[in-house]
Length: 251
Image (cartoon, rainbow, N blue to C red):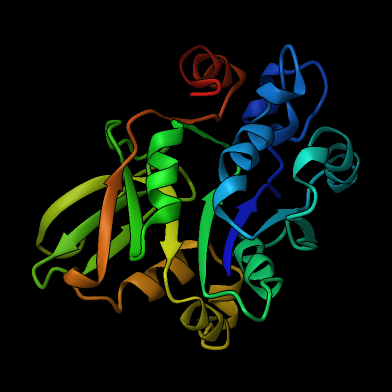
């Protein structure tokens, strides 16, 4: 079984600076609901996965109302999960909740963050790969927004991200550094489930990179592939969303 986890629990603070009233970012649309982030992600994934787990938190009742109506064509594969710590824990707990809701016979799982727009071809390449995948994008690496990934001297990967959006720090020599596409394929779902039992309380309360780093940090270079997303938008603001719609809607 192939599974997809989409996390949408965050409070969308930066996005809501541009809206008349607070919204759940993934549900926001201008025009029709098909122009929402969540519709675009689910509709592109639907033919290639067996289950879609959407993890919410902030304005969870809005998500519960939206999915049965506007995602009705995909509801046979969708399950909602609730992150009760969306305010006091980091982003990692949403991924933990998603992994905890995977079907017992799940063999591989793809994880994407719910504020992304991306082209269909790159996403299908990710979903259909038989190997574990980390994605990259072609934007500049800026400390106030980027999730950076670097390759060390032994060809192992490491993720860095500053939750304060201040500075990034790499403490060792490295061969390459990239801007993460914030989408991942875990070809070994069983290992992902095992990792949950190995996390400290601090890691449980941290970012999703705790789990991602632990999984990919164990892999040798020939055990994973990288995909550069051709067209990629992280919709931190309404203007980001509008730019994405102009470039990527249904592409």
